[in-house]
Amino acid sequence: MGLLTPTTWDLTGRVTANAPVSSGLLRLDVELPRSVTFEPGQFAMLNLTGAGQLVFRRPFSILASDGRTMSFLYRVVGRGTERLADLEPGEAVDCLAPLGKPFAAPDAATPPVVILAGGVGLPPLHAWLSRHGRPGDLACFGGRDGGDVPWSLLSDEWRVSVDRDVDIPAGRQAHHGLVTELALSELERDGDPGPRLVMACGPTPLLRAAAMLARDRDWPCLVSLEEHMGCGYGVCKGCVVPVRLDGPGDSGWRNANSCTEGPVFDAADLDWERFGAHHATGGAA
Ligand SMILES: Cc1cc2nc3c(=O)[nH]c(=O)nc-3n(C[C@H](O)[C@H](O)[C@H](O)COP(=O)(O)OP(=O)(O)OC[C@H]3O[C@@H](n4cnc5c(N)ncnc54)[C@H](O)[C@@H]3O)c2cc1C
Ligand code: FES
Image (cartoon, rainbow, N blue to C red; front, side):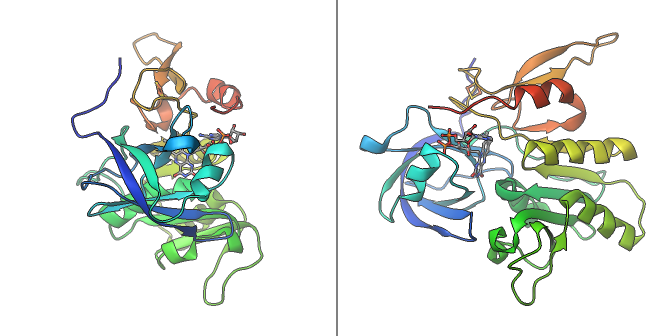
């Protein structure tokens, strides 16, 4: 069953900006006919209009929403994102938003968070930190190299790691290595062994490493998945992921719609063995 909520809008907006913020990442700003609120972790299904229209819309996390302008951060990986990158200011974009289950806002019982964002996994966690960040939270971003990092989006509270230690701008610092290693070294430096809530979004190996890091310490962990999606609201079943059944005596699993039950999942609910194999499959038309 489809789960379009009364707060989801199907709108045609106009591009106001579409430009690189690093060597590999672009920021797209779309002015919509009305303001649309969102919770960090929610996403939009975007499409072009007219001759450039794709058969299936493409999912993108919402980076920010300011008045009637909704912003996205994306990397060109295929046909849809190539077409998106060609859009000029004034051109039309179809936008179905907001969709999906967000990262929850913290309450008094929520421990300090450790944010692990990889590449285009930045938008939901950037939005979360901007809206809900508290003293003691640790935010880490992992990029390919210094040129790939969207420095202009990352305030000094963000720690940065890079796979290749090149093109780091003057005045900024980056750890050479994995983003999980960076987070652990920052936590060790603080000398605070207290519990943390780990929140991660990015490539599957990063999500898996985040889940293992949390599991080994008995910390809670939320991950946002970037599965292929057809509809974005629970109809096509193109986005299913294996989750564990947790009833008494259950050792099985079931398929969950990533678009409606996620994209944010409790890492402990995912069947990581099946998820890894399943995630290697192909793209959308
Ligand atoms: C909830 C959600 C949020 C997302 N947020 C963002 C975001 O903020 N910024 C961003 O750049 N991307 C994001 N993505 C991924 C984005 O949807 C895909 O990159 C996009 O659909 C690719 O479309 P395409 O036509 O350019 O590529 P295609 O031609 O469909 O595919 C090109 C290549 O990219 C791979 N690919 C396509 N989609 C995905 C995917 N979802 N995950 C991994 N590999 C994929 C394909 O397997 C293929 O190898 C998100 C995905 C989801 C589900
Ligand atoms: S994308 Fe269609 S059911 Fe999830």
